[in-house]
Amino acid sequence: MPSSPKLLHHGRPVPRRSTVVVLGTCLLIGFSGFIFGLTAIFSSGRQKCTIAEPRSVRVVWEKEGVSKDTGSSGGQIGKRRKVMGFVGIQTGFGSTGRRRSLRRTWMPSDRQGLQRLEESTGLAFRFVIGRTRDQTKMSELKKEVAEYDDFLLLDIEEQYSMLPYKTLAFFKAAYALYDSEFYVKADDDIYLRPDRLSLLLAKERSHSQTYIGCMKKGQVFTDPKLKWYEPLGQLVGGEYFLHAYGPIYALSVDVVASLVALKNDR
Picture 1 (cartoon, rainbow, N blue to C red):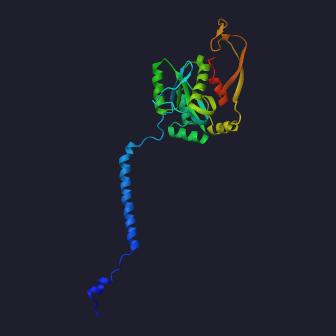
Picture 2 (cartoon, helix red, strand yellow):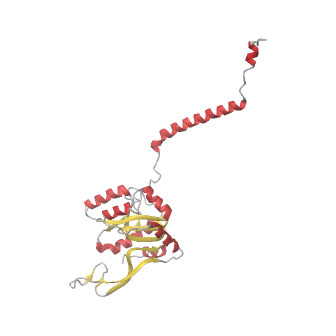
């Protein structure tokens, strides 16, 4: 017996309620994704770099201590950064090649690499250099700072006879900028193993007054016509005081704090 159109109409499958809910949810998710994509596209040009603060800084000295000054890249020296050790690599205007070699070996040449090294070892690394009256050399240094941003710039004349004062200025500047357990002085011809240095300093953290490095008692040999040895500020002849010596050594925070407390630069 042929079926009537009415019976055929009532025989169609009716969508279940769960199916309708699933389809509605999918449409909602798709629409939300579309809106999120548009938002990301239009806001991508306004995103800021995750490391906005400059790493290279310029330190100016006053008679009564350290003056917080603007960084060489225009940033402000703010709160002291907390690290286990701060490593200042002493360098000069004639050591461009040495710095290039270090950046090609153990020291990262980019911001992200420096940050990863600091996070993995607890150590911060910066080249330390003074100033010169040679405007050409200063211009070249500014270009290098702008490219790598890994300097600590001291307001002191960069010359061999001023090395003791530069060393003292470095420790004072490092102490002002970094809340560190150790402050390390290194030369720019040193090829470091940052991981081993980190382990060494970590083992000495319990000692508050520590010097790690070589000691030497020096002798002064000058032209017989000279009666005064300028860097020492004393008459020449014989041996002078036992002192820290070598291409790398470390001072604990208590020792550096005592240097910072000195009223003069002797």
